Length: 69
Length: 148
Image (cartoon, rainbow over all chains, first blue to last red; front, side, top):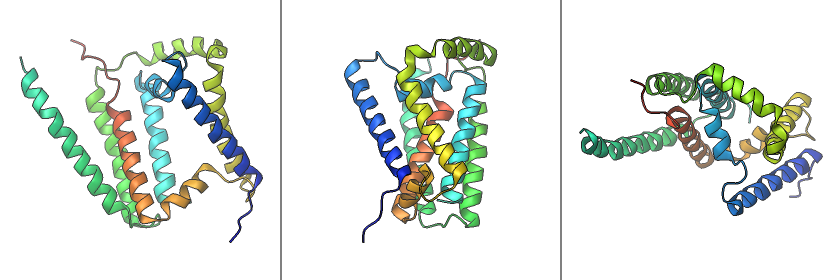
């Protein structure tokens, strides 16, 4: 069974490739660039930002496990 | 003085948490997204996460909210220094929002792809375990030493 590749999927593939390249560069750069771990730790620096990121985590969980996909 | 006692408690706490995650994920795996069990469990876990974050993080945040905001206003003004990461993260978030708002078959959202994993019990269970692990990290990571 053949499934057609829609334009949105092409954009997602390009973004995924960008993430892979980013992670590859991070692995070789010895901490010179901002990585996902630093971004998350940056969000955990204060009550407000920790609350925001926890709310986003909760909303993502509700969406993935209780709603549409 | 209490260090050795504490050092023994931490692995037990991790083991208990891992057991809890495995049990919850195994229980969650066969549930449908419309079931009340799925709704109640996710809602209770989110509320519990906020409660535990408040207990564990009391007096242990690195910065006050005001200082964090002020520092990041400066950071945003100089965003070009970290433009690669900002463009990539912004690109993913923006594209997902655009795809969600347009609601077209040609523009699938990230959750559409995730749905291909969660439609199977194994995928749903594994993703639930990952979600719980991420939540535990967000609740407990990067806490400063308690202020006296």
